[in-house]
Image (cartoon, rainbow, N blue to C red):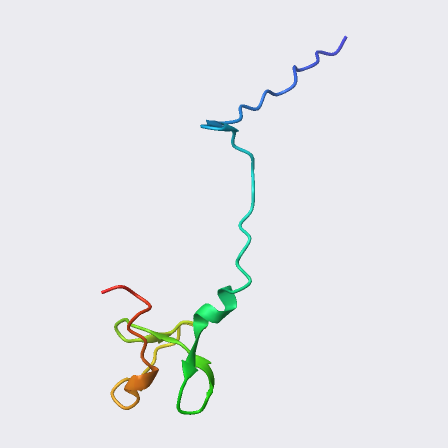
Length: 81
């Protein structure tokens, strides 16, 4: 007769409250507002600029070259100093 392999035993890691089950990350509905900033001059939202070398747009990561000319578009409260 053909030999039958025993079924595989999967060990589930245990956490402090029981087994750790696979899950997923559900993003917040408000997360879309993290990449825009208010423009008080034009009363609308504009892409947010994060500090860096050079500063960059949070939406797409492209560099922001206008810092010497348009300092109001620069957000210093995104990344802690």
